Image 1 (cartoon, rainbow, N blue to C red):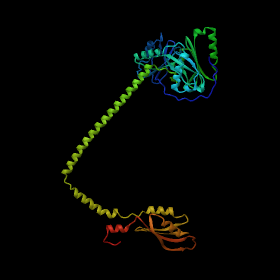
Image 2: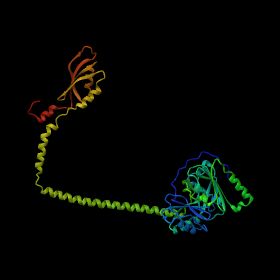
Image 3: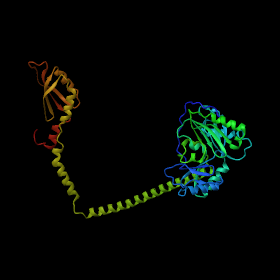
Image 4: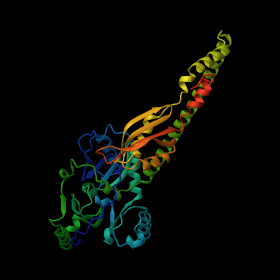
Length: 427
């Protein structure tokens, strides 16, 4: 039976991608569908029996334009499943270990059960109790085969109560009631913490009726809850929350079909890559042949040309010789020199005269210590031969001394240029 649910901190879980494109819901003798923006469906279908073939035929009538590429989730009544309460050790918290541990407990949880079962279970939150859901493998396979026969792909099977779970990891209580059964569950942290399923025939017994009342009495106003009693409550529902698929059952044939489809896609990709590779080789060969043809044609054109290559080279040499004196004239990097002076001269000093000629720079200005300026300039790698170009004087009304400094640029070799281009003329 349910216990009063406390509100611990809910752990945030990773939200996985929704595992279906279309969700069909079975309620009583009616087959409904959840809302979906791309779904074009007929009015809800009526059922006589919930056999696999009749469910598949009703789904085909309900979804006349659906192809086998659309993944269908089928929400069946809770009576199709068995729920068992679990108390798990901490070592079973990983997803794979969890299923292995629970499967090992099957003889204890469901004594006498020899039929193969599919399992859906999630680890408890904060070590609270959790429930495992079981479904006969034979029933899941029959449904998949029936849907496959009518051209539909049944990807997963869900317990109907999980369809209405919220899309957020919150506390939730739900009571799903139809003509023959009542199912109540408590949901917290995307995990089923309580599950109670009763037949209405059993509820005619005072003892069962009292137990059901006790379960319903645990529903509190401070926790989100819902009670669905008729077919209208299941119409126009949105697609199930992603967390609901943690409790989905996947028929073995559906898993095998996906594996085959994945393998086919890989083959198609590999074939496409090979085709592109071969096409690239073919294009490369074509361009190589075309390039060879153009080279041969160009060679033939050159052989028949009347242009004297030696004459052209001589003309080029003459032109280079003519423009050599202009092209190779030593450059005086005035901007670079000014930037060096701007960074070097202290704020208490300034220049009033700047002259550059043939690589020689002459400065005049004012400074409280001209000697210090000469020492600083002498340390610069770009210049040499730094010396005083005039006597230092003290002008009336000024604390600073007027100075004159001259120096030469190292990379400005006018003598070498003059000797190369004008050896018979004096500078």
